[in-house]
Image (cartoon, rainbow, N blue to C red; front, side, top):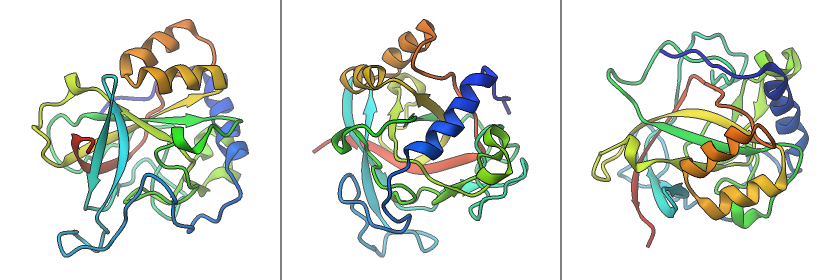
Length: 220
C-alpha cells in the first residue's frame, strides 16, 4: 500500500475547509440531485442501488452503485463508518491493483449544486456518511460528516469494460472557486494534475482507507 504524501499546511487547510464549507442540511437528508437511490433486489448486502455522475477524460459519465462502501482498520478511525482520510489503508477489499477515484472536495466555499455530484453533506449513494479527519484537524474531527464533492477518474487507469468493481478513494481539496471552475470545465484528471502543478488553489493527493464499488457507463 502507498503512503499519503502531501504538504502539511495544505492538508490542515483541507480539514478546516471541509468542516467550514459543510452546508446546513442534515446528514441524513436525501440528495435532490445526482442520486437515484431506489431499493432494488439487485442490490447487495442491504445496500441501495443508485447512480451519481462522474468525470472521465473530459466527459460526464454515470457511476452505477449496488454494494456498500468498504473501510477497514488499520489505520485506526474514530468515525462510525471506520473510514479515515489522511493515511492510506492496509486492508483492501480484494487483491491486486485497484483503480483510483479522485474525490474533488471544495474547501471554504460552496460551489453551485449543479457542479457537485454528491451535493448533500453526509449523504450520497453507498458512500460513508462520516469520515475521520482527526489526522488532519485533531480529535474534534474524528467523526465528521461526508463533505459535498464531485468525482474524477481516468479511463487510462482502468479497462473494465464498464463492469462494476472497487475504486480506492483519494481526496483532493480545492480552495479557490476559480480553480474549481477550471476543473468543472476540464472534467479530467489531466486538468487536475496541471492545476496541482501550479501549487495554487488545490491540494495534493490525500490518501484514505475508503473504497467504493461501482460500474462506469456512458451518461444517458
